[in-house]
Length: 185
Ligand code: NI
Image (cartoon, rainbow, N blue to C red; front, side, top):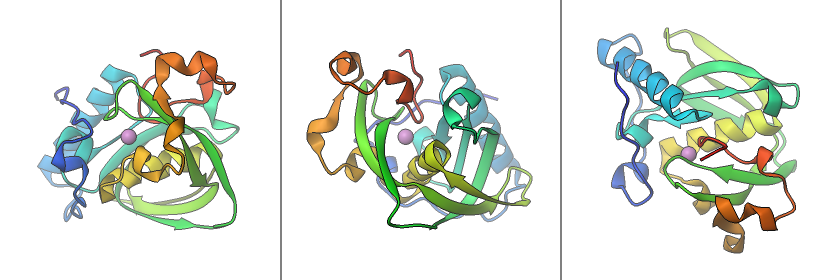
C-alpha cells in the first residue's frame, strides 16, 4: 500500500465527472481502496474520494466518528458507484465543511438533512443506508467529488468561506467543522 498525494482545488481531476467502476474486485481497484484507506489514516481525516488522489473513478471512503455523529456513527465505509436520493428536499441545514483539497479553509454549506444512498462496498456487495445530519453531510460532500463539485461551489454566501485559524471570531464551535480534513490542522 502507499500514501497518495492529495490533489488541490485547481487540479483538473477534481472538476471532471468520475467514471463508473466496472469491476470492484479488480486488483487495481482493491489496491486503490487500500491506498485510500492508508492515506486517510495517515492524514487523520473523515473521508476521501478517489479524484482527490488523482484517480477519476467513483470510489469514496468515509467514517462518522461517534463524537460527531449525533447518534448515527458509522464505521469506515467504502462506497463504489454510489447513488444518492434526497428523502426530504425541504429539510436542510447549514454547517461548516472543510476539505483536504481546499487546505486551510472552511465554509458554511447548506445540505439536505436526510438522504438514502446505495452503492457497492469494497467487496463488491450491495450496501444501502439512510443517513441524517452529519452522516448525510459527509456522504454528500464525498460523493460531490465524483461529479466535480468542491464544497465552495455549493456555498450560497462566499463571505462565509474563511480560514480555519480565524474561526475564533465565529460563534459556531470548531468541533463541528471538518468533512474530509482533520480538526487540528
Ligand atoms: Ni472534500
